[in-house]
Length: 143
Image 1: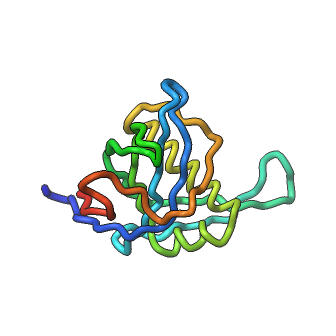
Image 2: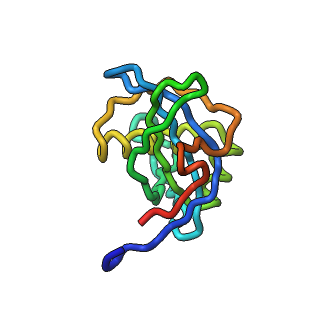
């Protein structure tokens, strides 16, 4: 796979559904997990807008797979991305809605930065752990 590249086989976590604002095509983001991705780190920080109050600044290490072409339940084409975080990060996202929003926003920002779609920030969470595509119904190895 190349020097400094590690093979990751992600485990299913949860799925986020949104759409590409440009063409209204559905987009599914598989939030997966792997021990090969470092855990998130939170640092207490002062809130510049509210003196005396603190918040947490998060660093979320990740791995992002290339887009895959899939089909939604009705057979319409859609884009599918695998976004991989550490298992602890995934668990925190499952348990805490605000942290889940931060993880989803981080996923969307990285997808836009790396692959250029414009994603709608309104999203839902379908009752599935992984959105597969034909030939890759389960998470697969990523380099």
